[in-house]
Length: 354
Image 1 (spheres, rainbow, N blue to C red):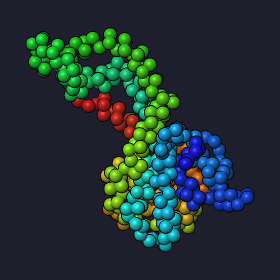
Image 2 (image 1 turned 60 degrees about the vertical axis):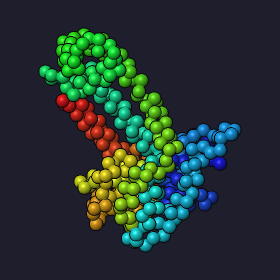
Image 3 (image 1 turned 90 degrees about the vertical axis):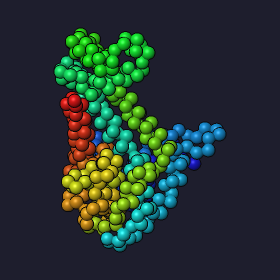
Image 4 (image 1 turned 120 degrees about the horizontal axis):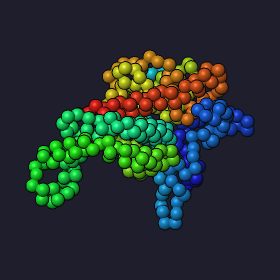
């Protein structure tokens, strides 16, 4: 049975980036975003108290962490087999797809990057809703006629209160037109009354609240499926092989990155699965698992630099050197830019949607 200290990065993967420390203990060097650089045992990184579940209570057969531990055990053998492959040798497709998918959906990186994206979204909405003209656009009141956004909102209201509106004897389009003109004419008064409550509501979803929401969503998803079929199917369409690396590789806390046809790297979990053309997973300090779809070679970028920029809290390595210390300064940069761009695009589309 598992304990309270629960690893979101498997020990079997971390050992591939370790070295023998004092007392013949397997150790790694952790390069972190805000805790400096330090050496730790492999069981001292990539773990959190009750990350997946509390300890089992009487009558409970298995906790989520127990299920993950059982699921992970045969995948450790898959990892060992991949590490034995010669340079450019093919990896078994189905097992590899399950292995990569499971690594991707179980880690802490997804929780924190998505919750931070949520905070950014709420901050953007709060700022936008504070401006009267922008708020009007977001609510579909920016034009001279009811927008689809506003019309759909009124239709939902009509459906919920059909009997009341039927008594008015008005057609649906007449009610939408009247509601639109009334809301627009009185919006300044509505807006001044709503700004305070809206800001308070947005603030409730920032900080620990949204992180816990992301954690609960991940736990529920893992309870349903430890390796989602949609991702497995997509990854099974790829050609997988192992490349040996002359440059010592790092392991990012997202564990896998993806690239589309533009060559832009991002954490696999934040990629559009149907647009992914290449997936890179470091499986040891000298072995790189590569999946390709619609291309003959992996993208031409600095792999370690991409891994570092796609990390959120940390990456680990088998040694400490100046180059990796420099890469530490780029942790989170790529992910933060991606989340900012996605949020900005979503807000812009909402404002200009007609």
